[in-house]
Amino acid sequence: MKKCLIFVIILILLVGLVGCAGGEIGFEGVVNRVETEQNMAYATVIKQHKELFAPKLPENIMFSTSGLDTELKPGDRFKGDYLSGTIDGQSVRVICVIVLSD
Image (tube, rainbow, N blue to C red; front, side, top):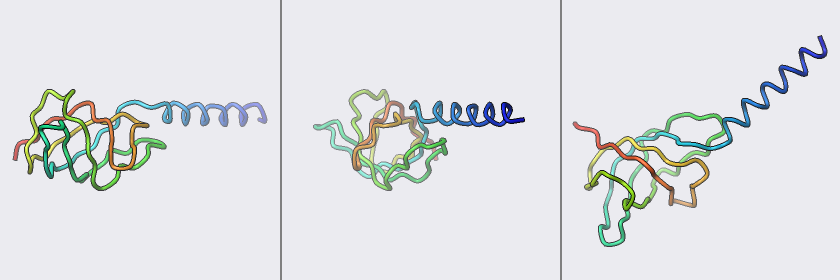
């Protein structure tokens, strides 16, 4: 019985570590403004997908648009993914954006 309990505790810790290891985390937002000269977008987060131990995004974020394939405009509602561990104040590393149609 004691060995079984130790095994379960180790298993729970491993699952927790895998969840903390990083990766892509999904969210949804609305673009507030885009500065094309600086390749920056400013958005309000309206929904964040739940991930085990993932830090919560701030309500308002900014991210670089230079690596994205999608051109953003103010008012666009979008789904995106950011890299876990890249939140720095309001700045976050967004790696994928898909504009949602109305």
